[in-house]
Length: 159
Image 1 (cartoon, rainbow, N blue to C red):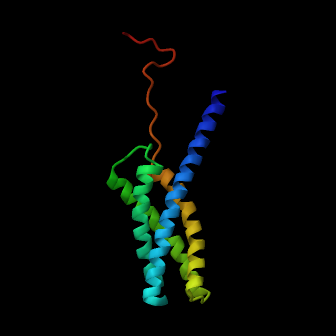
Image 2: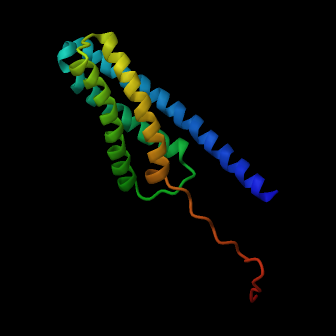
Image 3: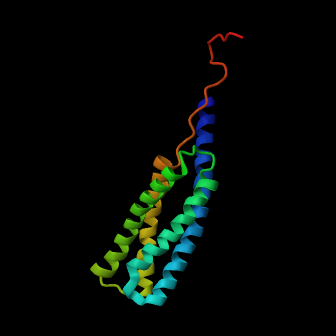
């Protein structure tokens, strides 16, 4: 019975984390696409990849603080500098996934419109998001170490 309770609590915790991660991700997505499209409108299609990088850095900064202080606030904090650096490095990989999709669409397939850029970015964002969720849980926002109970079962304590 206790095994089922632990499994339920673990799944429930992951679903709650996923919902919070999704909420932060949705806001970061709006920031990312808002900044990106403003830059694309301003620069035209000449600055396609540069605009994507700038917008992602802005959105990533928001996402780090949202995830650290809301989504994963109950997880260990291993130093802001360490987490921030890992978060940005892993986001760099997520950005690379997105930029590869965008570059493939533009330079390989020859699609060069605002609509094509947004579709390619959306596909890349999907793949990048899957990578980010997995990698944050694995390397950035670590599980809290279990506390040792005051009394260990079967061990007599001196008082």
